[in-house]
Length: 267
Image 1: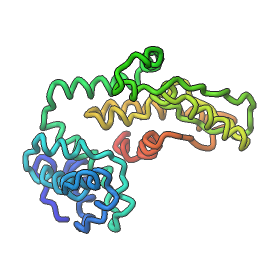
Image 2: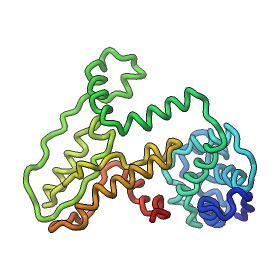
Image 3: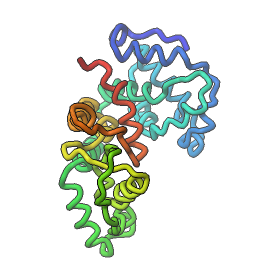
């Protein structure tokens, strides 16, 4: 797909990266077969190919609108489309660039800004866990719609107490320990049964995905850098370094695997 970048994006890191991705797209539409929003809504602009056209228009200088923003917002960033693209279009990287450029030009309504701020500040916050416990205590009294969003309190099970020569670093996550604590502990027990000790870095926090995908890419990058700093002592400079980083939440796993790409311009 040929793209004539507008002067404001030409020779910029985002413009160069986006143009390289767009060149791979051949308009075949195979991506629509595995896109959940296209399958649900049936709108070309709510599928990867349509969104690519919208982002191409923005990169070529056309002013984005709230509708442009809405179609990009509806993307789940699940990247199913990448699994069926014969040309290897890195749609996930492109939509990150597209959202950044559109959000810089299209202001959101105040209520939407407030909700997004609450999500990106509240979910990774240390206060989320006690707030969730309070919500679980009053869960029977909540309206049905809100009650469905608060999972019942779960018994997490015991953590293994044995130590092993083999060790792996486990990303605890920010929301999962409060909402579904059994997952992390079950992961630790599975590793223990395989003769591997799960260890956690106390200073590690949110993987950065929440802020990165909610109009705060720089805030997300700061969390990513903080995690790398927290993990590094377990990887290098210790007599028994960990073999790998284990993640049991798909969103966190995808994000951590992208650290090298997202932080590629760091010194």
